[in-house]
Length: 312
Length: 134
Image 1 (cartoon, rainbow over the protein chains, first blue to last red):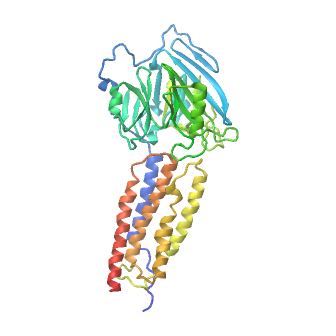
Image 2 (spheres, chains in turn orange, red; image 1 turned 90 degrees about the vertical axis):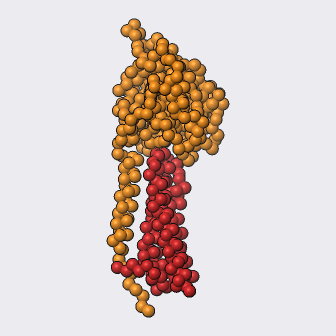
Image 3 (cartoon, each protein chain N blue to C red; image 1 turned 30 degrees about the vertical axis):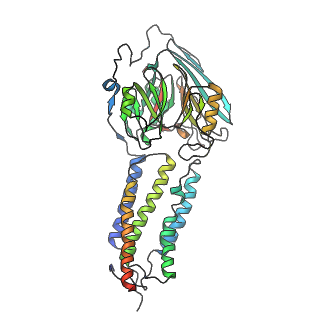
């Protein structure tokens, strides 16, 4: 029997591969390019059980307020910020020490004030739009799953990882770190959560370092630029940003970040936020660190959200 | 165009053997280059992506000819490569999303579509080859 000739690729198979490639392109566009806006689920006014009369959601600066600011400090009657630069692990680290009289000036903001996917802007532009005194990048909520509550509004209540640790900032300024498997987002909202950020992991809990030397985010095993939020005491916080990915700045592992924060600030709790090219600190109308994605060029990455101190 | 559904004989060549080998090499090199620029973030789905065409394609077809087993019909070969490539691209995509840290809810479609096609092709081959061997 003679060998049959090899047939040409059938049209149905060709069509299938065209469909497969088209679907793949759509998945990539959907994840990285196509902007979408979503609506909020609920806000704290609808779910808070106790009356919040007497507490203010809107913060305001009185006409008599005098603000004094330098390159490294800001002071008015509600906010006191001191910016210190450190050098550790061959890396520049920027620490903003924050003391407040009212937690309502600790806020978050979304890029273009829109909750959605692939809606991004630089940390500095979001901060400028809200006249932020101090700002850091947030958890890049739009690229991830997990709870999302911003300024008392619940945007996302789904979780695909029950062990996911979230940072919770309450209306009274208290901070806690929870696991999404232990409490629903609606419960957090009714408990008075004003901000819930979902990135992690927790770096310090109850004063103790809670990451090991082998812990990393998303299987990363090398040093990187980092961003962290810390609670030192009641209404006393710190925002920490480190540089990295350049010859001058090696970057930090999570354990190094936690160790540095523990040694320098001794906070009650510290939480890791989005790092890498997103790590940005903005203070008194300027970016103070050296943000970089590839290490070849110093420039801000566009992010989906920020955490900031300000009145607007 | 030949699409015989029961024409499983030893004389039918493996249509895609060279393609599987080239694709294995491509994914191997692609994974190395991709992870070189990923700032130390890695994904097993990306690193092992080359195994789909290597083990599931090239080695399997080589074994079939080496062991002188009946070659699958053209129809089964076409079906099989559709299923295998769907899973293969799904693995690569999972690697891309793991490395970037971005979440998506669409990756399950690669498994839901690719796995049944692949399994159907394998089961059809087993049934057809039993008829031949009887």
